[in-house]
Amino acid sequence: MKLIELIGIIILFGLAIFLVWLVLAYNGFVQLKNRIENAWSQIDVQLKRRFDLVPNLMETVKGYAKHEKETFKMVTEARALITKAKGVKEQGEAENMLSGALKSIFAVSEAYPELKANKNFLMLQEELSGIESKIAYTRQFYNDEVLKYNTKTEVLPNSLIAGIFGFNKKEYFEIEETAREPVKVKF
Amino acid sequence: MYEQINENKRNTILLVLFFSVFVALLSWVLGEVWFQGGGTLGIILGIFFLIIFIAINYFAGDKIVLGISGAKEVQKQDYPYLFNLIDGLSIAAGIPKPKAFVINDTALNAFATGRDPEHSSIVVTTGILQKLNREELEGVIAHEMSHIKNYDIRLMMMVVVLVGLSALLSDILLRSVLWGRHDKKGGQMQIIMLVGGVVLAILTPIVAMVIKMAISRQREYLADASAGMLTRNPRGLANALKKISEDKEILEAANKATSHLYIDNPLKNRKGMMDGLFSTHPPILERIKRLEAL
Image (cartoon, rainbow over all chains, first blue to last red; front, side, top):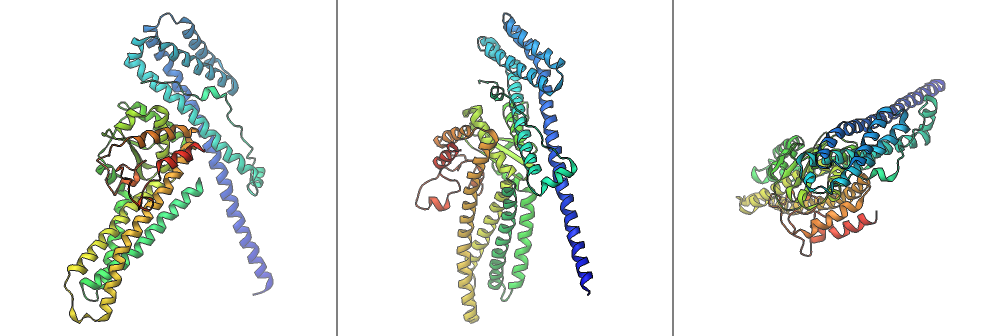
């Protein structure tokens, strides 16, 4: 075999390996990116479920605690803000308001033993606190995945691919720590 | 984390290979003992049964374990609390939702089983549902979720069956050597083989047990640590472990074969010199200490 042929084969081999690596690395990025987008939409799914459960909760609580007008107003306002919110930041703030308002509802309900014995109320309370922790977990998962993705876009040699195909760093979901606490539930 | 998963998958394969060699050796000796010079037939039969065993175990092992543990699958409307915790933590771990099972027993315990995250189940006792608070139960479920995510469930299921099978074979071998008919004209070769077979038969179950325990203990520490990561609250699990260790009730539905699956030894037998070597679970105080250091 001539030397030139040998060199040719080696170059072809190298090129083939490089191409395989390129495809694998590219797919890796796409997979992570899709997971992040999915996590983001999951947050919306949970928020929507919470939004839909709130009127139900209000009905139940109003039957027992008519005088807590201030608290009811907070919830209604937060809910109205969510429907009007434009952009991620505004929506995030409105959702936080609703979290806070719901917390006050559950705090207020402590004073009404009959309400606390109501089956429907207990079910809604469990459901809402479940959603609350799911929102927190989805955000946590989102951030974990963003961390993986961002690290990948920065370390060599993957960063080269990220540069060529435009896989840019993603932003973390940041929120005040208070919103992370789930609604307190007592049995 | 991904290294953990790969390491576990590799260990599962190594374990199967390791036991295949043992089973092949044992069944060769058995073949030689039963039918003069039938070693090859013995190996073929031994490997044949091993493959069937592994296949059954891989596809139905979780159902068998759930069955003998007396676990019943439950629906969301009956246990919304449990379902919300499982849903939330499967989101945090990024795996599909495992099925939920409950054992009707006042003892405090829980375990996970299945072959991969797509085919997995989490089992809790009614006792643990009643006696732990939300934070603590969340820690326990997160511990089980980590076992599922890390493929510990697959490894541990293989361990049960392989340890059981090798013990069974050794038992058959020992009995047939002790009470079987012996040819007087067998000669030296047969005696050497018999002695070798007996040594093998005695050693295999012991080696198998030690492997089972060592793997199991290491997995418990790891699952504790990843549970802390998942909930961002190692304290919940630490408190749960405290409550579980204070509970002295034995879980009747558990036995020696399934005890290593549970979050803490359901048989509560922690006495004796060999405790360190043969225990399926690390000392709970050590686990709590490690969790609190996270």
